[in-house]
Length: 160
Image (tube, rainbow, N blue to C red):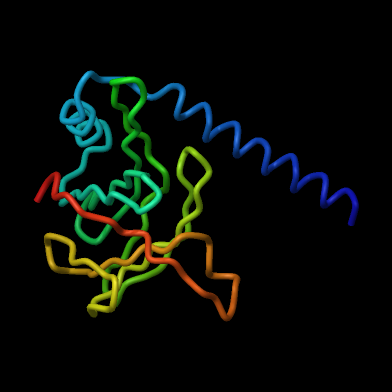
C-alpha cells in the first residue's frame, strides 16, 4: 500500500513537470491572432474553434479537430506575448448526445466541461450547433453530490 502511494506521487509529479514544461516550450507570438493561427495549423484543426474566457481569467480553446473529435487547449498571455498549448487529447462524441471531461489549466485551475445536445442554464452553443457546453470550476465527476460554480464569462468564435 505504501509503495503504491509513493508511485502515485511520483506519477503525479511527473505529469505536473510535463504540463509545466509544455507551457515553457510553447511558441510565443506578438499577437493573439498569430498564436491562434499557429495553433490551428499545428493541431491541424479542420472544424470549428472557440475561445472561452472563464470567470477566473483563463482562456480555454475548444477545437473540433475533425467531425465529432474535440480537444481542449489554452491561450496563454505573458508579458505582451501570446502562446497556445494543448490541454487534452482528442475525445470522440460521434453518435453521442455529448460527454463530460475534467481538465486543468497551466496555472493549476481545475475545470469540468460538459458537451450536451440540449441547452441548459449557463450553457453556450458551439458555432456548429452540435453541442451546448457548460464549464464549471473544479473536477466534479468523483464528487457526488456536488455544488458547482459556472465558469464561462464569454465566448469568441475563432474558426467557424
